[in-house]
Structure formats: structure tokens, C-alpha cells
Image (cartoon, rainbow, N blue to C red):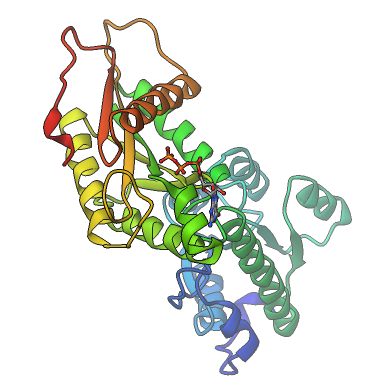
Amino acid sequence: MSVSELRPNQEIDASAVALSSGTSVANSELRKQTLMVVDDYQSNLQAMNALFEYQYQVVLFDNAKDALTHAQQESVDLILLDLDMPDMHGYEACTELKSNPLTAHIPVIFVTASDSSDDEAHGLLLGAVDYITKPVNLTILRARVRNHMELVYYRKQLEFLSSVDGLTGVANRRQLDTVLLQQFASTIRFGRCLTLMMIDIDDFKPYNDFYGHMQGDDCLKRVAHAIQSVRRRESDFVGRYGGEEFAMVLPDTDLEGGLVMAQKLLQTVRGLNIEHQGATAADRVTISIGLTVYEAKQDYPEHISVEELIKLADRQLYAAKRDGKNRVNYYQVPKLPTPIKDDTQHE
Ligand SMILES: Nc1nc2c(ncn2[C@@H]2O[C@H](COP(=O)(O)OP(=O)(O)OP(=O)(O)O)[C@@H](O)[C@H]2O)c(=O)[nH]1
């Protein structure tokens, strides 16, 4: 049977549907995986749509150029790609997909009338995960698509698990480093500003000593959750820096906005009202914050590194501890002519 003769497949494969649930462990929302089909024949597109629409979100393109643009902008899990298309050959499209960091991870299956083994070898060497020849055996096509979708699902689960801190559920240090590096690079490139906050639970050693390590873990989780809850924008990012220290990255946030967020953090953690008999600053759990704002300025020739940015925020964190804890200390890069010292930042 040729592709153009395909008919809707009424049988829904239960295992494939189960595997098409969302891509993150934390986010349990059910999301159909997305299958992109690129073929210049409308009848083939409609046939593929009919075959897969029950299991997957199917997006159809009759030309490679629009398909490539879509794949860069939207989430696509797997691509069925024709070889002979007027606007761009399938090999060329595959090469473009694989050379773009935004689309390189998307598996490509060639679906083509060419059954030459040289063509198949070439397609696979270009990075395609599979090569299917027309006329297509429907059962085999469905099975192959399902198998590759399964791999995509598990790969995404692994990616998610490897980026999350097991105890608190916020991003782990690895992910934090990656995001901070990306955001800082884009801040410099586009001449914007960025706030970095290093956040440390006060007197956490005495807390562990007094209440026990398990309750210490519980306290860490609650504080991490409270810090997360203060996020306002999609781009605001929280990660566990290590031990009882967290970091918050706020792109496009200046000193004023950063201090507002820091105040909210201090209040929110105090508002948890977690009793702490060994605390020096209050009778409950508090945090101290070291805040650095970086403003990319045209006339400021020296760009500091991410490591220096962290060091500057850490220095402010130590200063906040030294000044009595439960407060925020800050620094602006480039340094302001007269640094603001704002004593209203703490109780
Ligand atoms: N329960 C628990 N404790 C942790 C974890 N990670 C680090 N800690 C503890 O956090 C404590 C940090 O203590 P210190 O670095 O001395 O700091 P502190 O007592 O908070 O003092 P200040 O930072 O000056 O307020 C240590 O006792 C660590 O064992 C964790 O995952 N769970």
C-alpha cells in the first residue's frame, strides 16, 4: 500500500498514548507528543495525519523551509521527512536541522520512494534515526514512530531528572550554572541588566543540631519552595547552589527591581514562621541575601565573568551575615559613584 492510500487507523495503541504524557516529571500535565510531517504531496500529508492524529499532535508542512522555521520556534518531538521536495531536498533539510542547536536533538525519519541502499546509508549518516521506503507498511510505520517517540519521552525524562535537585525540587547546581551563563551572556550581548542573588539560610548548623537533620531537610524544602514562590516572570530562575545556599537569577531586572524581590524573599521566608531557637537574628528561620546587579553599558569596557559576578554577590552575602543576618546587602556593577546604603532593607 502506498502512503497516498493510507486510511485512518482507528485502533489507538494504549502504550503509545500512555507514553505521550508530558515531558517533565514535575509537570504531570498530559501533553501529546508532536509529530511533524514534511511532504510536498497534500494527499500524503492527509494520509499521515489520519494515521497519527489520534496518538500525536500532528503538524503538517508541504515545504521544508516553513517546517524548519516551525521546528526552531515550537516543540517538535519527531519529524517524518520526505526526500524529494521542490524547495529543498530532504538531505539538505536534515543537515540544517542537525546543524542548528535549536533543532539538532529532534529525531528525523526519512520517508521516501527511493529504496537505494546508498541513499539510505547517506540519510542515516546525515543523522536521521530511521529510513522508511514507500510503499509504506502501515503497521511497521506506526511501530517505528512509536518506538522513536518512546525514546524521545525517556530522553526528556532523563534530561529533566538530571537538572533538578533531588531534595528541594528546584534546579540543581549544574542547571543553575548553565542558565546563569546563558542569561549573563545574553545580558552583555543585548546591553541589558541582570540581578543575581545568593541566598543563604541563617544559622542552619544550629538548626540541624537542635532539631535534627531530617527536620533540617524539611526546612530546606520549605525555604526552597518559598523562594520559588516569589518568582514573578517566566525568566526568573531559582537553583540550589549547594548545601543551604540558593541562587536567584533575574534577567532584565535593575537594582530597584532586585531589591523589591529581595525584600519579598526575606518576608516570605520569615512568613513561614519556622521556629528556630538557636537563631541569632530572630526566633524563626531567616535568610540573608547577597545581591549583585550587572548593567551592561556601552561605555563600560570591562565585562566581568560569571565567576566574578558570583564572587561579588557572595561577598555581599558575607557582609549581610556580618551585619546581623536576615537582610540583603547589594552591589552594582559598574560601581555607582556613590553606593546606596539602604538601612531599610532589614528588620
Ligand atoms: N539537613 C540538611 N543540612 C544541610 C544540607 N546541606 C547543608 N546542610 C547543613 O547546613 C549547615 C551550614 O552551616 P554553616 O555553613 O556553618 O552556616 P550556618 O550555621 O547557617 O551559619 P550562617 O551561614 O553564618 O548563618 C551545615 O551544618 C550543613 O551540614 C542538607 O541537604 N540537609
